[in-house]
Length: 143
Image 1 (cartoon, rainbow, N blue to C red):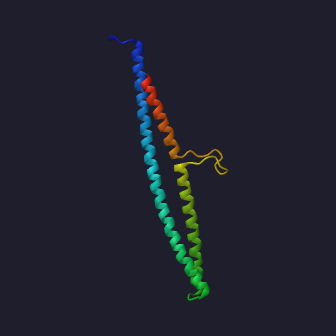
Image 2: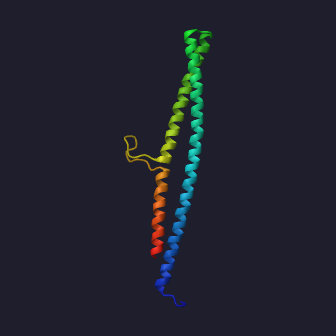
Image 3: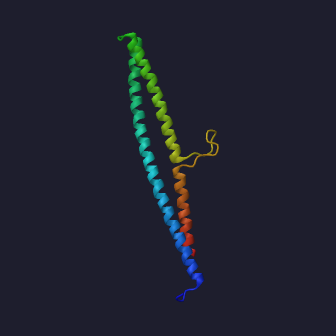
């Protein structure tokens, strides 16, 4: 065996195993960082749509108010404005729910009435992997 004891060879295999494990943890960290960045990008796109809808709603509400005080449109046109308002309100609610879901995916949640077991977000997963990474590095040094 070239002067190496069976015990030394075993420790080398163990060390290599945990070094591979450490690389795997690093890959998982990178994957989650990518996922978090993409999720934030999607959330920002939804937020921009949300802001756009709120602006359109504000203009529409002003027009509805103006028409209520001093009508200059036909009743059918005014009814269409009300219909548009209902649609915008629905879209705004949908965007809010989407942003809330993405925030939950990123940040997670402590146990609440809505999420009784809590939700582990990407940030929590990253923290746990970084902690595991530190433990693996320390263990590899001990071997």
